Length: 332
Image 1 (cartoon, rainbow, N blue to C red):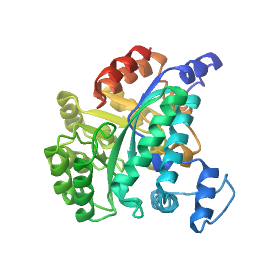
Image 2: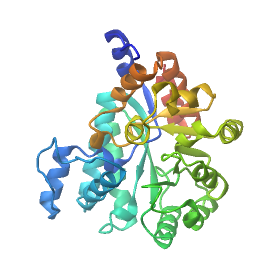
Image 3: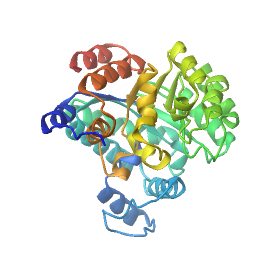
């Protein structure tokens, strides 16, 4: 069993300025806000207890809760509210100084993309004014939706404003839709000048990772845990400079081996460019700082490990211009 971090170390990890590239807007909604929005918009909940409203037990039930939550976000004002709260919580609770945040446009069918983006922009700007956090947005393909919907969404993104939108991603259960289904959407994004990433390898299937590289043209990977069991593919990712964003929450459901074989440790030891994100912090009942402490406790990651990973995350980010230098100056 790993030794717990000293109180001083835990506080250092909480205080550390952080760059976060793997976080879902919909997974950041405060439980109380979810309950309020669900009541307002007539979305039935199994419980109105904030401690139980996000209850799930596996990937399938997690996605059910995620979709129910998304259905409660209906208006431009709802989007602005949850965006603002998500960023304020990250800044004040975990000292996140820069975040790239996924959002699923097709999970909000009541909102045309321009209206959705308007709400997102309002929340991002107000959070920055109040806390100083810098944020950018990554519209994300939802694997359970059709390739046609993904392509239409990608066209909207390419045609829309780009001051805050910096790339295209893909999330949802890997069993719901293979990368090959979304080649068109990714081609639209890349042809429109957007870099692309995708959730892949979360269920430890290496072919998912290879397909996201070869078919979709990804220059970043989210999760990527299958790389820990495929040294040849990991060597390719390292050689090509592909950054991997990992998340403690998901491994608590998808990894059941000894800590000595934990994918985070194996990926670090393989020399990959990598950084941690909170994924869905409100749904997981944690925050990024808490995840830093948990990984230090379980795997022995050090302050130096996380300092290096934050630097690697900023280098792999899609932030440009004066904001990039401003964020760099804030890091340890």
